Length: 111
Image (cartoon, rainbow, N blue to C red):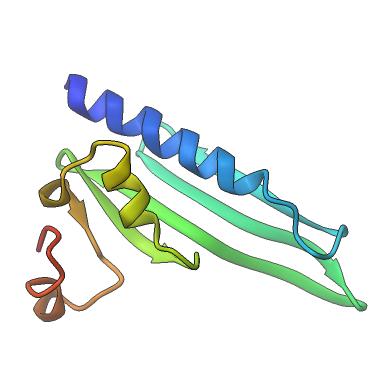
């Protein structure tokens, strides 16, 4: 269980760091959404740009069965690589946004 708690801390820190990156439009904010009871974590953009509503998920990670499931990754470099840099082994990271068939070639966990 200590590992899962460590994963929670790393995920929350990384997503908090992403939420602090300023968008080019000051009327759009990055918000973190942490569901600690269900282990679901997101960063979303919310606001207005040129009279248009902006709302979209940038990152969505879940922790299930002691693994980090990346449901959506809208970052340039890839959050999976950052998780590895923070000491999380690839066999505990699932690229859930890829089909189960494709995951076997990713170098990360299949499920």
